[in-house]
Length: 488
Image (cartoon, rainbow, N blue to C red; front, side, top):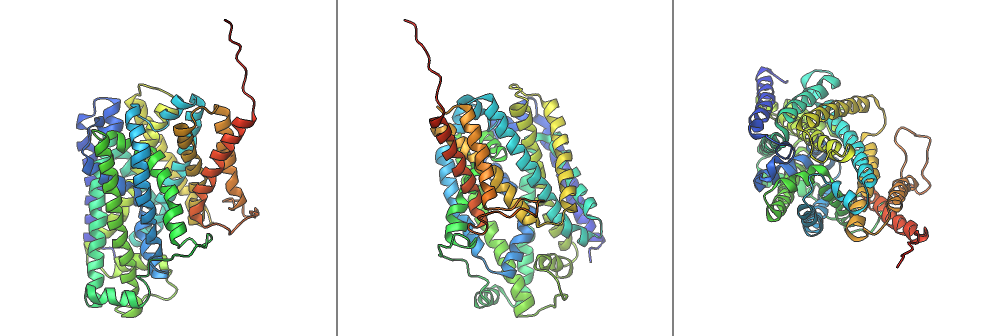
């Protein structure tokens, strides 16, 4: 049961988040202060903020459920993260830092045109607000059952608190609350693992039984491109998605630009990867420990017909002492709030700088856009709550739809800036459409893709990125250029 002491812990956490937002706002004097922390943020909290932004509440709940149901093979996505850190550190961060930009998509106007910049910003905004809605809704299903409130009320709790401290404190509030939120969900995960291991008979016993039951199996070297749980798909190809997010997402770009110099920006990026691996190991082993606890050692009995996604929440409510349950619920809220605060802050900057093209930027207008995007993200979560389709499939479709073409835009701006804008935009549009060959369309169940099932979901960003680049180059080559007559 979620008792009075648990409520005290949860409310205290929410109040502390808002207080940090108020505290962080003290030195916001300019647009750069509000959006980039003045360009002088310490790299350690920035690195922690990067991983806190990456780890959503669905990760905290979904990773243990996946291991409980299958095994640890998706931990190979950390190989993709490692590859992405190298590529982003070598290719993206130096160009972003040297350009003097304040927004990721400003670079696209310099190399192509303002229309390309705006298209990229609009695509990114659509992607991020849809992602925010899903990341708000998914944990709210669990939180509503734990707290005994409606799903919409659960969505509102995290949304309102995150909007409030982000609106008031800006970038510094986002970073410093991310640091606290990382400590909360990481500490909560360690405590839950400790309780599970203690109930099983110690960490040694837990690890041994997890291995013998196949739950610690993590490697699959198959070359089957339709299998999402192989080194090829989950490790190497997944790197494309990681590069797109870490290199082209304003949430990440803002953090690189907030550091004092390029070296510290790269150090924050590397720190986020290391912390990401540690978090992965913690929650993957948490899933294995849950399986041993309930299925192998049978320390406690699960209710009949309990889904795998509900096992960890059931343990949180029934297997942890009072106060710690509140801490774990706060950890879930921490991850959800980190997702929405980072997203609406990035969307506020993108709207002000890239869509409206207000080059100097206005803090007052940016604050208005942060509230508007926060409301949009909350409405997207309400819409997600009303849909009956697979939330995961919808999320994966939109991720591939937007991130691949965004990565293509940056690669073309780095290596083919001679292309004309219309060639680039046609390539991006066709790249997005290419996914319809392999994937169904969310909310249109009647559509059957002709090449469905050939590629695992990790291939979608690579497919849309490749089509975008290839078609942009082809269109520019085929379409004749206007001849310029030079008069002597």
